[in-house]
Each structure stands twice: as structure tokens, then as C-alpha cells.
Image (tube, rainbow, N blue to C red):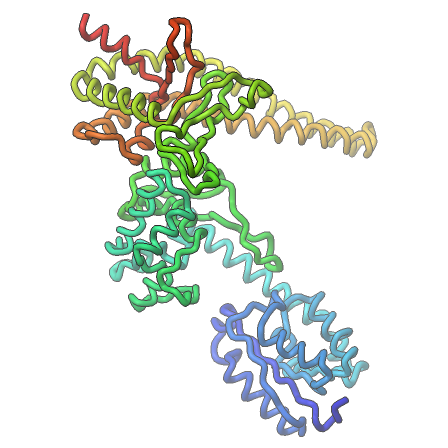
Length: 545
């Protein structure tokens, strides 16, 4: 045990961003001066300062406070002094816990100078007021948080970017405080990452490729540019974390829009950032120059959902994640070994297990599939570029016929769901009134309201899905034009590339083999992105007729 004269006097200072706005009185320098002067005048020995600069009083996970707490729990502190009670914290429950339980447990005397609080005199009227003062300190934190949230909400709804960290690929606009300009070198890296993803590479493969190419990671790049970054530089400036790649691939801001309210916190006590669902986010388009085209971004999100495991050999295929069984709809597994020649690699239905599965042996060799897909794509590109008008007219008519009934059915279902939601709201009011008037017991009211709430939640989910489906059906003409534009970009293509495949094709469906002629004939169907299946043979017959 240390003697009383050997123990230290802990002088604790804290300053948050909100406290700093009040001026010099709460500055760290001012607090230190007051505390040191007080310790000197009252002859408290061995003064040691513990400082938290830029930390909120609502959270006790502060480095300076935790270091002081370690000293207290080790029995090396005799007295703890703060400028006032709010410096210790702004959570009335936890502040009271430290003052009334933790400090006395380890024999620590606590003093808040400006509040005339001293635990050595428990009968003081100032000590009796400490609980009320702690409540006011907490109320101040809550009120400040409310005001900041209101200001940020107003800014976010106006379209001002709320993020303080500009995405990699952009830099601050010196002429506009909230504006972003494209950083050419960093933007080139972002485009490269999206291109690699469009070619079928996953985040881990992209990160590995960037390391091999000796590309500076975002933190190292910003530091070398003399810009501020919240992250610490890694030992290897060319090391790319997989999460960094994922974060870049999922940032919609690269399409030229501002996205606000992407995350939220539950309260001032719980600072954990949680992801907001997309319907609660605010998106403002064309707020800055785009690095990635919107259709490329959307395609990448689709590719990201089609994640597939690499084989044990480490090999993956151009078509991995895109090939499906035409009968059962399951994905076709890519099969290869280290001993296989290229012509032996093949795809087989995942539901086929040597006559024990739920599907027949849908099987196709990878080289054959590549040849068939390229032949079909080449024919489609040639036809669309030569007979664009006829292609547009026929496909547009087919899409209208296919979607007309779906739109009508969807609208009828949507109207029924919305009517039922309105009816449930009226029923809620009715059973609430019956409960208040004593016509309905509390137990019965709880059971009925729970059932109604469950039905409402299911209906709201269904309504959102129907609305999205109707939007997709109603914008099919725009999708057709976008597909034609994509095809024209590949008018001069001479071989199948991963980027062209994933930009034009949505899925490849393998049919069961036909052996009726004595020879094995393998059929495939290709669903093109935005337009679905293209009846190429029928179109060519109509054109040549």
C-alpha cells in the first residue's frame, strides 16, 4: 500500500467540440491552470493531469479518463479534481456511480471546484444539489444533440454532403466548401477497380491485383498528397484491404450523386453507426462529376450478389456465377482439377448428384459453352447494329405484351394492399377506443394489436416490393434504349471479353441434352441484361422474309 503522501492528485480535464464552441473558459489550458492553482493553494501533493481533448461527456470510453481510472483502481490516487461536474461526464447515472461508489470504494476524494462539490463533506447542501446538476448536465448534452441532429437533417434534406471524409477519387473544390472535384490519378484507380469487378474478379482478387501493380492504397495516397485522413498509414503503402475494395465498389457517390443518411445512431449514449435501409436514405443526383457510369455501378452491384466460391485449385472461370440449369434454375457448378486440360473443365447442375439429386445431368464443357455464347452474342451485336429499327420495334412490342398483364395484376394487388392498410389503421383506432372505454380487456387488446401490427408489417413489405416491380415494368422502354447503346459500344469487338460478357449478359441457361438423333446436342438460352431472351432466329427470318 502506498502512503497517503506518495499518492497522486488526479487533475482531470475534458473538452468536447460543443464545449469548445463556448469559448476559452472550457479550454484544456484554462482547466489545467485552474486545477493546478487549486491543488497548490490547498496543498494537494503530486498533481498529475489526465486529459481528454475532443471527447464527449456522454461516453466514458475516453483514453484520459480510462488511464486515470486504472490509477485509481491500482490504489495510487488520493484525490480527483475537475473544474466542474460536467467535466467528469454528462451521463447522470454513470457520473453518480463513479462519485458515489467507485471513488469511495478506492478511497478517492472527489472535488468539483466551480460546483463547490467535495465528497469529504457529505452533509454539504452543495453536495445535495449534485444530483440535480448532473441531470442538467445530461439535459444539456441531449439538447445539444437534438439541435445538431436537426441541423444535419435540414442540411441533408437540402442535398449538402454530410460526410466529412471525401471518397477516394475526389478532392475538395477550393471554390466551393462543400464541392468535390475529380482527382484524376485516384479516379483512374477507382475505374480500374470497377473494371476488374466487371471482369468477374472478387474483392480479394482485386486487392491482390492492386498490390501486385504497386498501387498506393487510399490512406497512403492521401498522406502523400498532404491531405488529412482519419486512418493511420499501413506499414506497406501498397497493401489493399479487402474491405477497402468492397467500400469503393458500394459507394454510390461515384455515379455523381450525394447520398445522405446512410447510417444512424440509436442515441447519444450508443454511438455505434448502423446502416440505414435504402428507402430511408436521401439521394441527390448530378451533384458532382461522375467517375463511374450509373449503369456500370448497378451492374457491379448485381455481380456482387452473384458471389461464387473459387475451386480448390484456385481457378475460376469467365462464366462462374452466371450459368444456371434451364430446368430447375439452380446454379451450374464449375468443375476442374489441377490435372484437367482446359477442354476437360465443365459445368454441371448443382442439384445433380449421380442420380440421387433432384435434377438430371445438365452438363456442358466450358470450351463448348464459351464458343456457343460468343456465337450468339456476335450474332446479336451484328443484328442490332445492322437492323436497329426492326429490333427496337419487335422487342418493344414483345416487352409491352409481356408486361401489360403483369402491370395490371400488380396494380390490382397494390390497390388491395393499400386498402387493407387503411382498414387496419381504422381498426387500430376502434380497438383502442374500446379498450379505453372498458369494452375490450387489456389482454385482448394486446393480442389483437399485435396481430394487426404483424399484418401491417407484412403488407408494407409487399407494397414496397410491388411498387419496385411496377417501376421496373414501366421503364422497360428506357432499358431497351440503354441495351442498344451498350451493343453499339461493342460493334467492333472481335472476341469475347469478361467486361463485354457481364455488361451485356444477365444469365446463361443450360438445357438438358437432346440425344434423339443419336448424337448429343446441347442447347443453351441466353438472358441479356435489360431485355431478357432475344428470339434471334425469329428476328432474322422476319428480316429476310
